[in-house]
Image 1: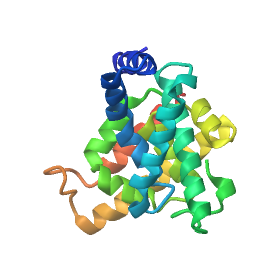
Image 2: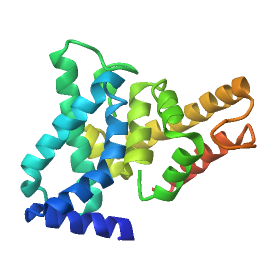
Image 3: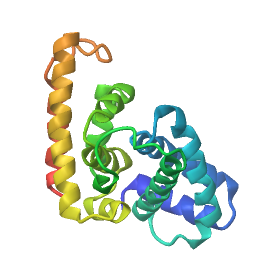
Length: 215
């Protein structure tokens, strides 16, 4: 277990014993990536509210959870997904992007590659481009590269086979690389990083794809 995962696991256990400081640590560790996932499911204006609803359930059901940090991330993602779909149904709206809800579709501990991609591309820009992917691909990429789940865990969240999740994430990353190339052709250079080569965004995405193929 990696250092960060060990710390999160310990914090979850402490939170289950009623340690409020530990729960805040858990929230700070999980919330940014969980919110990124929710943003692939509902409109931006609703994402914070849906994430808050998810955390209310997480806090309420925390004592029922069993497992380590990786299982906890999967558990919270599944709760967030259910709250997002409830939100969509309650308002009679389709998901914000992608195709049919039946196609809603997941990353290993390639956290270094994920962090590099997010830092290099800028979270806002990356998520905006991910929102242009078909829904199954968008969810798979975010669950695997942003939330940090392996294919098996993501498949459990999405109710799909691990192989289908791997396929969707690989296709999504290839499409994301194309979108990044298109954005670079318009912008010339990514303003988030001085002197960034035009194809660097695509190379980061391809490194993420290689990492995913190994899991």
